[in-house]
Length: 301
Ligand code: 13P
Ligand code: SF4
Image 1 (tube, protein in one colour):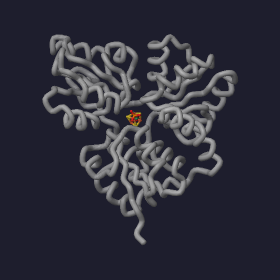
Image 2: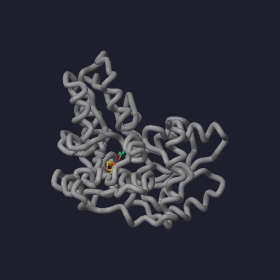
Image 3: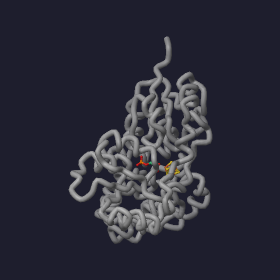
């Protein structure tokens, strides 16, 4: 009997890859889909931590990452042994980790969050009187501390793509359209950019914001996130002038090199069973990483 193959694609992959996929989504939607999937093979057109999350949630499935190099700077900037020591130096804190982390990192966490549920989960923990440490994204953690007055100690890694968004270039671009343009931003962006944004939210959150926008103030909307999502935004609202926020004057060109390693050829090969199999995680590591992920999924459903 032939194997059932399902292809998942993150919004940051190129449009042709999204068109080849059975499910397109943000990291939370894709994790939920992977958990429920009955497929024998899950091709994950995203980055490695996403494919690892799919494997942890659905260990029976064979999970294939089209290109072995599809990593994420939040993962590569985090030394797990140093993280373990940092966590141990805060024994009375709950460790909340962003899903953009390795399986070993997740195994050292009490909760996993995505950009969609991070506000609610951390608010929930503070309501219970808990003290929280947050890793690995210092921009996201810094924004939460600023926005809600928390005092979470932060790990210090950044998304190399979102960290490039630049306040000065942004101000120039906004002024060029009489400052009437809107700005929406992903919380991996630097704090000065986030402070200027009318809306800060996850990839899906921004897409939903665009779908619901009434156009009252301006047709020009700058988006501070990876360029892949602009395809979905323009499909949803072709009449709006949706532009990527600049990373320096005149340059609207910010793209995740790891997401773009998912070429058409690589995804087709993965659908034939060739690529990087996520088969290297130990049972103990998967079990330890699953707990904080399931805690998040139960909270978000
Ligand atoms: P989402 O959780 O919004 O899908 O973001 C994932 C990501 O890698 C953002 O850079
Ligand atoms: Fe990682 Fe940034 Fe790429 Fe998202 S956009 S996968 S956070 S490097």
